[in-house]
Image (cartoon, rainbow, N blue to C red; front, side, top):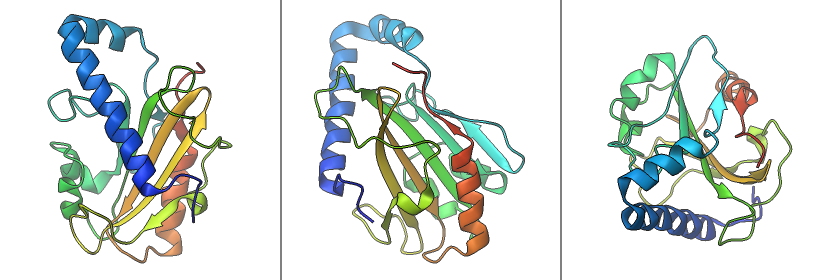
Length: 188
């Protein structure tokens, strides 16, 4: 299902945004990056839940996005996050495992890009774009669901990964329950 932004546009937006963040960090030095990260509102987060592990990637794992990303994974799949390397860890996801991450792309008001489509909260998994195959897909069994939204003055990208191309009703319900626990960043 389309959400108003195709994958090429979304990939370009993300690449440009992360590239700009890296450039600003390089120009301003580490002290400026640390200052802006400490002043900026925290990234999206997940309310704690039994059976799920939540964490932020470290600066060494995701230098351009560590302060803006939160990850949740089914508890039995913690090895997928150590270290967190987008797409690489997905090959270790158990058949009933789920990993999702939410990334704060930037302020709608200060963005170089138009805002992503506005979304009501909580996000509904049924409205995510479904990708059974994509460039860089680590294994053919991995299904990706993706949604880029604007909420509370922030552009967010939320991804959900299953280790099966055909998640059953119970697996979809578990993913939706975790999406229901996703908290957007503080209002801008």
